[in-house]
Image (cartoon, rainbow, N blue to C red):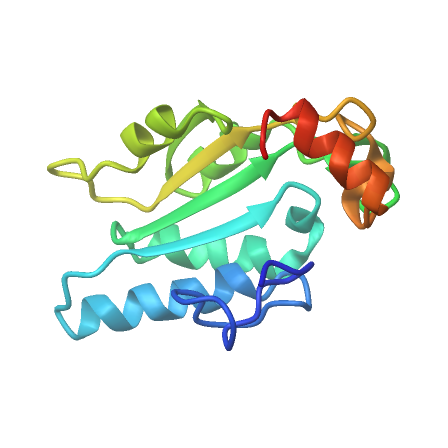
Length: 174
């Protein structure tokens, strides 16, 4: 169900297949804007990777969301500092990341992306919020699996049966 790019036909709640990087946030901005125009009470959530932020369409969407004050929009950035083939900083550094989102008129919260309670707190509705929310979720790719942790090759790696068994054991899973 959770292949490289989640499939809207296989995963409930996923509204769009966004295999072409840079499409998710622009789509979410459109959905959030439509929700506001329809006076709907739903919230729109979108997840991007930090490497995906090198796509220009994300920044155009960020600027539009801030301009339109889409307070019903929440962006989660998986800030693991890795992308396919290299570290984000080696390819096209996105720092200072939080400052960029603030400059586009977004509220910004930084959180431990491995802490569900902290993430839920970051997502909690806030009375009076007038801007979109950017949650920078600091994560470690492959966390808890010795041979995967912080290794760029696992961006698209598929474990062998033996590696899967080892990973399940290291994560304390049956």
